[in-house]
Length: 177
Image (cartoon, rainbow, N blue to C red; front, side, top):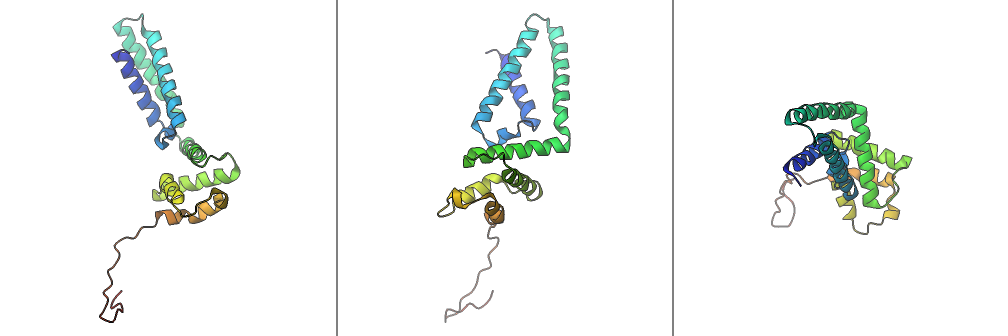
C-alpha cells in the first residue's frame, strides 16, 4: 500500500466519521466498522484510479475539486433533522445488536428517540444504561419491555454524591444527618 493510498484512506475515514452519517461507528458496531472500511477503501481506489495518469498539478486540482464535492455531499447532513435522524438510527442499530431484537418497530423507535433526547439534554449514554441493565440481578429480556426500560432509565444514572457521614453515639443512635 502506497503512502498516498494510506493518506487517502485516513482522510476519507476522518471525513466520514466527522460527518455524523456514520455516527454509528462511535457505538462500536463491528459490522458497521467493516462496512466503513470497505467504503473508505472503495473511495481510495476510485481516487487512485482517477489520478494515476495525471501530472502532479492536475492531481492537486482534482483532489481539491473532489474534496469540494465530498464536502457538498456531506453538507446535506448538516441540518438538524438529518443529524437527529442519524443519531436515532445509530441508537436503533446499537439496540438491535445489543438486545438481538428487531428494533424497527414503533415502540423501539420511540425508545430510541427517548434515548437521543436524554443523551442530548443530560448527557446520559445508552451504553451506561445497557451496562446497568445487564448488571441487574435476575435480568431477563422477556420481563423488560421497552416501556419498563424507559421507566427505569433514570435508575442507571443515579449515583451517590457526597454522602454525609452520620455520627453514631455510644447507644448506636445517629446523632446528626
